[in-house]
Image 1 (tube, one colour):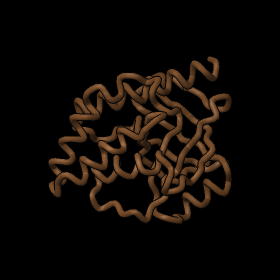
Image 2: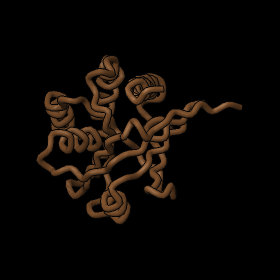
Image 3: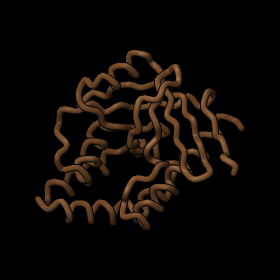
Image 4: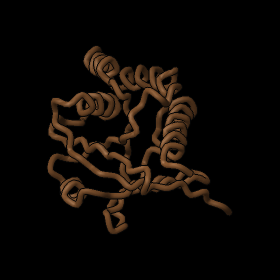
Length: 184
């Protein structure tokens, strides 16, 4: 499988898994959204929840921020986000970046380690599918569009999330990544 086909299959899988989660599981992240983070040597660090974001997230970021600020009711925010994300948001995989994003406590030992190492692995195992992505992790600056997008997205689901976080951008190296079909 070529790196381009692998990338396309992965993005399609991510979008379809998220549509299913928001429509049938009330937005609860499933294992397709929660890979195991491995260091560059393959040692398991922890399970993280990753977010995918549009290539141009400006308008969606404004919507996420507005959704959060318009009410103090977390249930109302959750409902609005779930309706938006379960509608047509994930229908066009081509509008999404192939990078994955996750929040960590500011200067956490794990985020420092993977960024210092310069590479890590995101190991997604869901049902009969296993994507093992070799990634380059970077800490985003607060003024970057994707930092704001991920912050407001996550803040709607976790109102206690503070501003003192790191958003890590994981950029897959599709030539070093692979898809493994799990057989019984």
